[in-house]
Image (cartoon, rainbow, N blue to C red; front, side, top):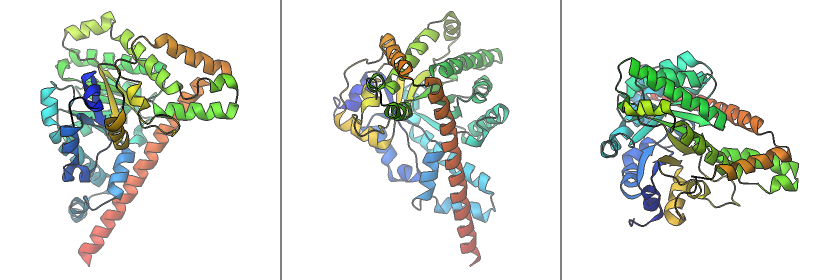
Length: 375
């Protein structure tokens, strides 16, 4: 790819391009290495849905499954070993990127068991366990921004563990997340950790907001609501960025920064376009701003590489315009607070369902392997 292709331009604009997908097939085939080399990919994220899909397809995991079956590993232990192996290998694939960016990029994320999303103590304990199990400096442990997840974020950061906060939908919850980040760094500093080595991103979900809001707009059918159809997600993210700029200009942050702390970067997640009536790269091109991450599904990454138009910063200074979108939605009768609540609950439920599918798939594979060995 040439240096003036859209992904190069996006990277040049200060946006870190991450892939929202990981599988052993992608690792073994050299595809991930190709994306790093040719598509400016500097990180990768995973979640239970991604792993469930990876385990259900292909034979890349067969050898490890046979080894686990031979050891009579439990299903939970097998899932942990399989997923942490992929993540550890991906961390190795990004080692040079991690070094070249002084630890900012080259990051690989692994999520805590979503069944713990409403249990602060167990979430924090598993986050620390995953950090130790993968044992790579460029790991991010993903913690959902549920009410119970917020204090777990602080506890995990306080232990010196780098965190990717996921499933953020509202600006109010994002402010709680940023406060939890600052609390965690302050506690880590008090405990003697080198806070310059603690990194974090806050994953603000995009496309799901439009999907839910537009569904409600269509149900209402009034012209006021229709005038902002398809605008809520980008406006929401732009308001989040305005909140980020405010918090990270505070004296509280500056004191941490002087002690070596790195800011918690905003990450635009769920950036695949769900509505075919809109440009498939909208959640990439409309959210360009330096110091952020855009984590894309493979389809969106290739679409952006092919035809995205990167035209500078599209976020800074857009806060008032974004507020007007939400004023219009509220005037039209859209309960925005309920939108966020529904999306958070659905997000946790979807990951719980995927986790159950992952456990079921691995259990079936272990049983087949044991039957094969006994035959």
